Length: 125
Image (cartoon, rainbow, N blue to C red):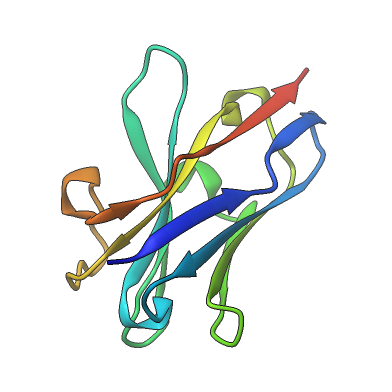
């Protein structure tokens, strides 16, 4: 079992930055693919960014390429999401998730085995 706890959400103005953290316990996070998903009110949960457990390859949704960066600190068993140039449309609850599977470039909610409870990011215009 992997327990995931997100932190770092909050209110920020458009153009600002936030860094989300996903701290894991129970297992070594580098053994799993770890991703961030987000869900805006009334919308489905969408993939944002993922990092492979095996080789650290990263994958980004087109909507966040060039603005968001995922990284992993193995010593802290934590994955980070650096979000820059935030836009109002980035407003959502952000969820950290981990998978035992090797997903390649296609990440879907149904393939994730462990989820955190989420952290709210609100971007004001």
